[in-house]
Image 1 (cartoon, helix red, strand yellow):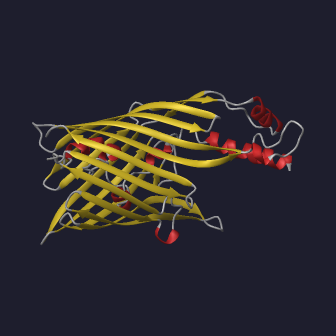
Image 2 (cartoon, rainbow, N blue to C red):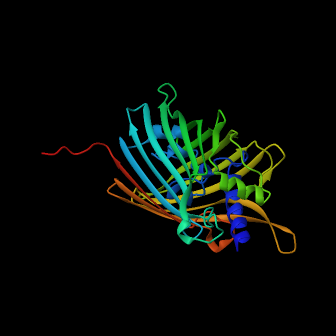
Length: 361
């Protein structure tokens, strides 16, 4: 039993430390936020125009239609094991500039720590079990500016502070910058965002006790060392079209293309240098009251039982309701029919947008 427990501990910790590979560093920041964007297949680079634009493309903050905006989201992955949360607040300074503050967390809580399960005499003592959390956290400070001489053109930037921790075993601090632009003309929309434009770094520090180090030695695992982890730049491109259908009905069609430069990934278009992941989304709405949404993306090649590869995709559906043009409640349902290895299933988000606070009499 002792050997089994030690191996289990080492496997769990090895998986956690592998979390910090440079190629897939800070992947929690690639999941997307807000039920509207997720339902439309992450095609928000060109069409985001509210507080959530701080994540999708900070330039979109310049198109906020209300002075104050607050947005919240909660999602659960892997049958509720992992929690994914977002909160953002936006402020429109004037017609030409806006700011936002966003917080994102992806974490697994109440993980059993069995490194001290066996005492010095070799006895199993379940009272020695403790619990810890493994979480990724990001704080985004965003700014957008609308050009007066070029109507429809906006620029934006994010400053990101990242904190990642694995209980008392390891933690990392990081910093990075994003840059974005949007252009809108007669219902046509285009956007580009350079995520991690300066390369985002995470400085990892490991805090291992002698007992944990001894477990690593006994099981032949490499003892992790303090290191600097880099996230290379990625280019997000997008385009969209807003169409008035008459009698209060309208539609928005959007597409996105995520380009990474860190080697071959399991995407629809890939090479040894460049990988591209396309997304497609649409929204049909009645005024600003109700909207139906759909999107596809996450194209991947998965091996079948006979070794042949087949292309899979992820279908997303969603609905949104707006109450008095102030409170918006959005819902997204993803992984329709389980035809892809999806990362989420049900997402609910809330947005409150107002121009001013009522003064008390």
